[in-house]
Image (cartoon, rainbow, N blue to C red; front, top):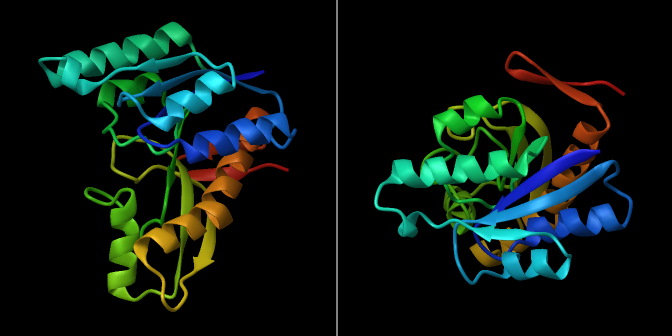
Length: 208
């Protein structure tokens, strides 16, 4: 059984997709053992509690030094002892010591086709704003393992989504969620839980 901790910052729609996929049997051999948010009062905490999942808030604002928050964050995850950490809209830079501790055991969902519209400053709605500004015809989402770089870890899965005339950042964001994020993130977790993928250097190898 793959024990998963999900880290979130906002509404938790990807968290809900994971919860629903486990309930529907689309993700097997997997249990969410905890949800961690860096923000108080967000809907993701409500989603976790409704599903009977232990939820915790660790806010950087509660610590005088960023290093103190980083240590508290790592300590909480160690306490929960997961096999996999899923960053599902977690707008916090993951500390290097955390990446080393959980090497090839942290996955992130990013709302673009990496290497486009990724890296420092590209998160949430900003990604879709930049995609529309650039005039791309295809965007999408990427699930990848997390390394020390920003959105640079080995890619697990990608799914393209068409940009349509009249799209606003909000409309495009919703379509990318529905058509890509909520599809490839649950599948990636299921693949990891059932031993269908492994990391080889900078690449992910699928074994079916």
